[in-house]
Length: 249
Image (cartoon, rainbow, N blue to C red; front, side):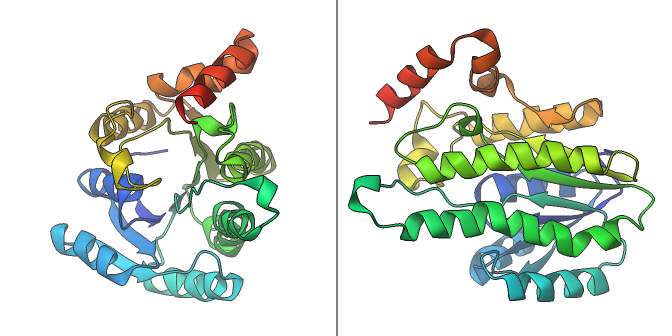
């Protein structure tokens, strides 16, 4: 993937990793469109970054995704990159038997990216160079028991990304997976943004951009995420799983 000269759509671009990626890529000469459900948050991003655009999107709604994709292509005919960043992470108590959080998480984290990719892919296949970037998680490889459905959806995104990459390997569309570790955002609430155990957001973004600039990777795995990503291969899964879940009880 070329790191500049693209027209890039970033879902969940109003805050956290999405906003930080949007600003970093905007600064590198890309046309960036941030999308999400919170209009005020999107407005704050575009006001702080002249030239950046925004669009409202309910990633949980299949009808809205179809509407959004049509309008995005009409407004930005050179659109050639999507970063599937929108996601939610909520603790669950499976013993309650309540599946509301699980269903919401699957709709947002898994069905949303699948539906949006399907809607945008015909347009991307007509571009000389295009890229689909999915955002999984270190928890795709070693799950956090407190957030079982979140971890499961990220494992599914990892698997789906690999299959998508294989199916598109003879086309102009690249598939790149970004797997964040625990990062200082508000994904789990305001406390996470100041948690010293989490990777500073600026450091994470700088490392991601550096890896993308190398242009030689199908997976963007920063150093802090490698113990999770390679736990199974290194034979340390049980140890890493136990340590991770002991920290987040």
